[in-house]
Image 1 (cartoon, rainbow, N blue to C red):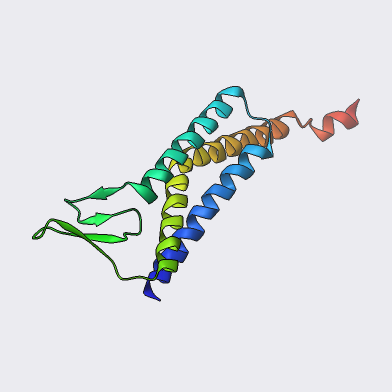
Image 2 (cartoon, helix red, strand yellow; image 1 turned 180 degrees about the horizontal axis):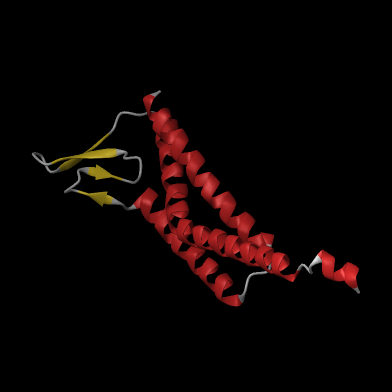
Amino acid sequence: MIALMVILPVAFFAGWILKNSVTLYFGRAWPSGWVGLYWFSVVLSLALGVWFCGYAEWESMQFRRLPIPIARFNPITGTWIDLEMSSLMRHLVLTVDFFAGLALAMFPITASMRMAEFMDESRRLAAARADQSNPSADEAS
């Protein structure tokens, strides 16, 4: 049960980042530079997701896989000891680790796209305010 208290928030956060990324990308026509950065981020995120769920291990930090470890390193014997969890929980952890890797690489482009969208909207609103004519000038003519 404690594992689910860690797994579920990480899974929801990763899902939220990935959903926002896809929604932002398909929500408007981005210039080619943004499209290139987006697809570079997608390729990087796939590689990072595979590494997170399949190959990440650090003897110095004494854990295997990220962000939710599945094994602990014993420095005395020099072996990896699997953490006690059911096979269903292990598969859930590895799936969440994969999607966390995806989200980690997608987060910078998603945040940048969100800021660019905010800046465009701010400029559009400022231009609309500046373009409004003076109502009293219309009545005088």
